[in-house]
Image 1 (cartoon, rainbow, N blue to C red):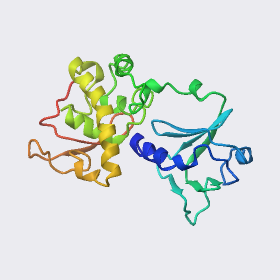
Image 2 (cartoon, rainbow, N blue to C red):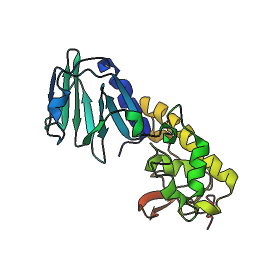
Image 3 (spheres, one colour):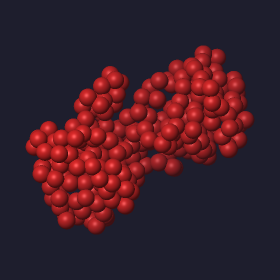
Image 4 (cartoon, helix red, strand yellow):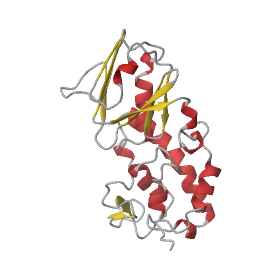
Length: 243
């Protein structure tokens, strides 16, 4: 599943279509696709893993899920979920969720929850975490209503940086460490963005999919953790377990 930084890259790649009219629309999405015909795109936005195509009175929400893809000015052989053709090119989405959000987009999203948004509010994230003292931090970090845009790679790398075991309970983690985790979720997301743009993301991984801890020279443990059962990579020596 693409994480927030990858959706930010998508937003940058499609700016050529901002302010352009859709002259042809097609696809096998369940939405009323014809509604997009001859509509002008006013803006592109992102909220975490959601890609938002904004029109005058509604917004199309694209979620790439686990295996979704897109193509700018090119096509795949498979039928697109949504295809939009403009005078200066085309934009195609495959194997994704497509929904229409009626009215003002601001009524659907709290931009303070998006770790890459200018309105990101770490204090709000701390307040939300304080309400989940018995939840494992590995689950809390993946809660999109707290850390919108953070996925499993970012989760693993942030917890490794902060030296916190993924099965630690939120309420048992010292406040300074919790604040460090909150800040790193945003910091790492922007670093992720830069590395991915330069095609060097994997080179910077310290824990995710690794075999050995670079700090301790001990084996990295791989385990499905928390209620979400997502893969965690961690060192039991330097990542402290708070329970």
